[in-house]
Image (cartoon, rainbow, N blue to C red; front, side):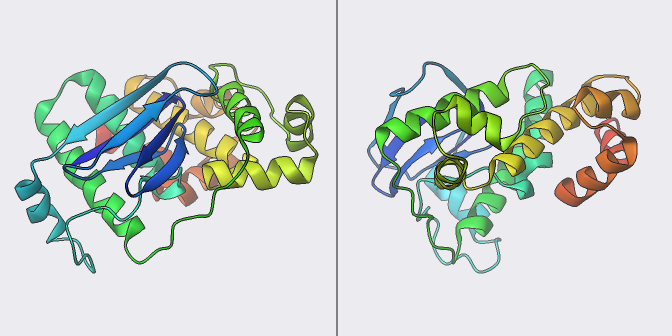
Length: 238
């Protein structure tokens, strides 16, 4: 069994459970013995943090997750979601620290989250054509570049040579969220990593992440990650 968190870049993923374009914040889900294909049809390069589980061990984890009736994934992926921002940022920090015990804990928490999110939910319908998917992929890579910009829907749509409405609809089909939600997720993800890896003040991290005032940053961080920035930083240093 496999779960991989996409940290950079994008790629196309096809398996017996379905297909999707995977972008930063997505989870690739793979069942044991299932054939799959990955490809870079629209842009090159990606990075993932991948966890692999023996089926028997995966069953023991799944048995403890509420409402899960089978130890297998019904869908090919989980799109970016606010529910995972804090956990995925923590996973990157732990990976870089090469802490095996912490990574094991992250792997189990990620498994439970993936099973909880996919249980009882219908897979999103994603059917943009290849040209539009390529345009959205390029927009995603621009948002994910390590340059803090004030991305707006109209400018992103104009650069993609798409009408704002068509861009918004297609973006949501590919990523599972709106452009604004994705930009906010990306900024908060970067901020969460900086909270754990730097000694910069919270206000400096907020401004670096593109927030104009600390109150807005604190409110949105708490809303998406479920705790305050100071509490998130403190837990990581215990």
